[in-house]
Image 1 (cartoon, rainbow, N blue to C red):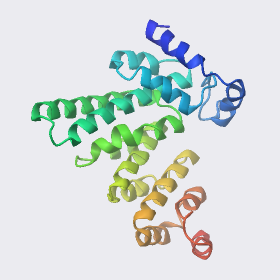
Image 2: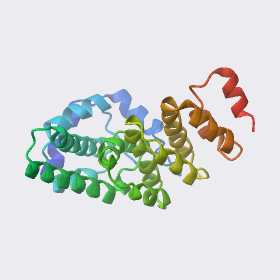
Image 3: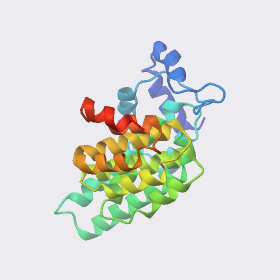
Length: 250
């Protein structure tokens, strides 16, 4: 390992939980033929990984690249939390009214580089938790007020994790009341073959429905005959029992 990876690994190792080390590989489906095949865990939970990431929040992209290339799931999680922190720093700089124009321009460029770096390494963002803990903050927030073409390109990718990044990134858009991309991507991904995408699309539809319940109802009523059952179940979770019963009838 490079020096920085040794340092981060050592910091993470102080939080190892033996019970989690045994449980996490099963939870994240690392067996032969499963979506997380071959992934390795040292047994550190998310809050503790965040603690370590804060200590290394100023790492360069070259060092983050080394962490992402590592074999340990927690190392990649730590790398992604660092990217999230750096993206949040850019966001705060852009949001401050008193920030000088030159500083704002630099922050915008830096955030753009972080997004490009993140997407260039999507093959290493290779489990659902890694996507869900980082895509909305790094990619989704960046796209507020900017073109969304990249989401549709990701949705067309042959890589499962690109597809999940596309739909989960819209969580940040949903939070500011922008729902159109979630519904468009849901249609684009409606017939995706993987259960992880059924869950992700259903989850984002559910979140969009919290903003506009009628729009979600109409979408599901129109498309329920072709929606995978898991996607449908996730999407309508917050409806009342009778409405769920009606919508689950195909």
